[in-house]
Structures are given as C-alpha cells and as structure tokens.
Image 1 (spheres, one colour):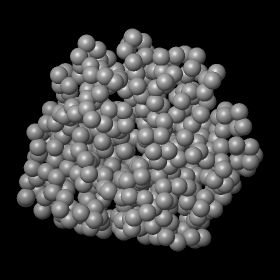
Image 2 (cartoon, helix red, strand yellow; image 1 turned 180 degrees about the horizontal axis):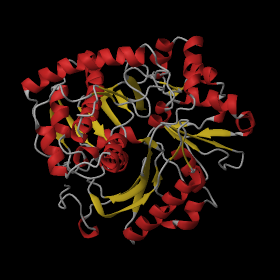
Image 3 (cartoon, rainbow, N blue to C red; image 1 turned 135 degrees about the vertical axis):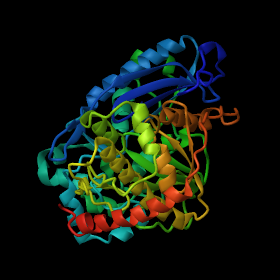
Length: 504
C-alpha cells in the first residue's frame, strides 16, 4: 500500500510542476509532480483495452488515445490552477507503430508490441541477415515486437497503406503530433523500435534497409533535454494556453520510466512486474564509446547520449495472473499467498508461460504456453503456482545472462502492480533468482520515473523525494537449490517443445 505521506497537496508543493503522462497497456494515466518528484493528489486515469484476436492481432485506436490524453491534460491543468507547469512528459508502452498520411492523420491502427502477426517475417530476416550483427548495431534481436518485422509485414500485406504512409510514428509521437503540430522520437522510443544504432544514437541504415523503409519517413530523434513547443494553431495552443511555454518532452519508452521510478541509479537491477515484465540495468554508455558486448538473449536500449538500459523482457506477467484469477476460481488472496509461502514441490506442474509468445531470452515470438505434468489431481492453486514459477524461470534465464555483464548483482528493486496483486509472488521470485528483493511500495512507479526524468532537465539541483520501499525479502537457500534444479527441468522442456519446434 502506498503511503499517503509521499503524495502531497498543492499547498505543500515545491516549484516547478511537471505534468507526467503514461500510456500503458490497460489505461492512460496522468499526474502532477512537484520539483522533488512527489505526486500531487489526485491522479487521473482513463481505462482502455487492446483489441486482440486469435491470429495475433493486438491494436488500439490511436485517435482514441489522443482523446484520452487530451482529457487527462485538461483535468490536470485545471487541478494546477494558477500554478505554472514547467514541463509535460509522456511515456508509452513500447514498441508501437502508427502510419500517418501527409496531413498527419492516422491511416492505420496503432500496432502494439505484442501483435505477432508479423512473426513469419522474423524467419525471413534471419535467412537474409546476420542476427548477431544486427544485435551488435541496434541492441535488438529479430522479433515480432520490433519494427523491422512489422514494417516488412505491412509492406507485404497492406501495400496500398504502405505506399500512402507519409510517416511511421510511435504512439507517443502520434499523440504529440496531433496535439502540438510537431513531434520527435525520444531516444528510448527510437531504441525500442529496433531501428536505432545504439552506438551513434541515430537511425541505423542497415536496419532501415532490412525494413524496406526510408529514414525520411521517421521522426528526428531527441534526448529528454530537447523539448518541443506547440505550433501556432495547434490543439495545445487552443486548449491549454498556460502550457504555451512548457517544455514538452519527446516521448519515452515506459520501460525507461519504470526503471527510474523505483528510485535507483546506475548499475542497480530493477525488476518490473506489470502487464508484461522486465529486468533492467541502467549503465554508462556514451555515444562513440566501445559499447557493451551483449549476450544473445538480452537487449540494449539507448536512452540518451550517455546511458543505455540493458536487460530482458517477459511478455506475460500481469496478463497471466489476471487470466489465472479469472479462469481458475481461486480462493481468497490470503489462501493463495499462504500456498506460495509453502516450500516448493515437485507436484507443481512445469509451465512455459508464453501465452502471447516469448521475448527474452530465446526470442521465439510464435511460442505458446505449455503445461506439463498436469492431471486430474492438479488443483487450481498448484496450476497457479506452476504458472508463477514459470514466470520466475523466465526471469532466471535473464538473470543468468545479466550476471555475465555484472557478476556482482546480489539484489534488485521490484516495482509494478503485480508485485502487490499476486500474493506471494515476490517470495518465489527471491528464492528462484537467489536475490535480495526490495519491493517499491509507491503506486504508479512508471509515472514517477517519467517525472524524475523530466526533473533532471527542469530542476536538476532540487533534491529528489526518496521512493518508499517495503521490507527486503531474502532468498531461502534450500528453496533456491530446488529452483536451480527446477530451472534445468524447464530448460529441458523448453528445448523439447520450443527450441526444436518453434512453430508449435
């Protein structure tokens, strides 16, 4: 539970104010923050849902999201009253893609990161290009969540739209274009596309060529300190005259915001447990430097001229727990938590938790969930635990590769709604990863991180509020040994079911 002392009212704020916006998988959210990074009550939220289908479709109407953000900004500007808002910061789920015409109007839906209809293009790209070399250049493997495969799929299946698109934008860029009359791709947004050269911080020629895309159809790239201004006659000028001189930050990826939102800095491991999940390290990585030698299962996303995020992602965390809760008719939360605090058992089914495909570390987008050792004696709680242990196994694989880069990792901070919504998950996670875990107890850590990033520019000398945390969890050595053995069994299951038959 978030402490009310971290949130403040307008009477206690320290100037300047930042208006932070987060376009997530389940809602668009917004909040005002003061110069210390404390959120001002109340927050604003507009729920939404992706349109999905069995063929891998995952889309959302980009103009619906523009309307959501417009309403959030209006409410928050009204909340601020006469107090000046110095900046407007926006993060979105990543990656995303919207095609627009010459007038800046969407001619496609927004294709979301988990739309995997372009999976066949991944196989074609692997036959055409050296995937290791592409990863060395862009920090990304070939995968349906990145734009090279999606752009090729669009060109192949929707040639008329492909030809008529004047620009290809992320969702955040599109929102800003509609509201400001101008836009740019934040460096982290560009990196999450799979099209950014991680060493130069510019669009990568080879990745563009592989995608069949001209660089002229993409936005310029901008670091957080490079702000935008509303154009004359824009919606922002008309609706929010008090924001006329605000610094509109280029949109960033929500993973970068979530990493900063837990209140740690360089070299600290951060685990996000939200609709999807991730493990991330923020590292020094100046443009023009040697760059990191990435293990094959990880990504590296440049976030500005001096830093990159290194880590791995898991498609289904909150999606999986929400599905389990809905379908299994589970008992009350205390009973579920008590079961997860029990010692692990071989009775628990083995689960490969790829409900919408695999990202790190194998990058098999066509993989689907596998339940192994399930029979009529398997209880709902055992199946629930099996899926959670499968999610932990996914994080084990990422941890093993991160340890190759930083063998000194012994602890992590954990944020995201699932950390509190899935009772007992953190206990299993600490034991499975053999890491000390500190839960972050504030709500909406992604919004929080978005504000912190903006305040680095707007109020660099103001001390930041300390993000509140809960009691640190320590791994149980006996349970950790069990999960090490369990990892080998799941690795064998993965090799048999996914690696040998990726289209199954």
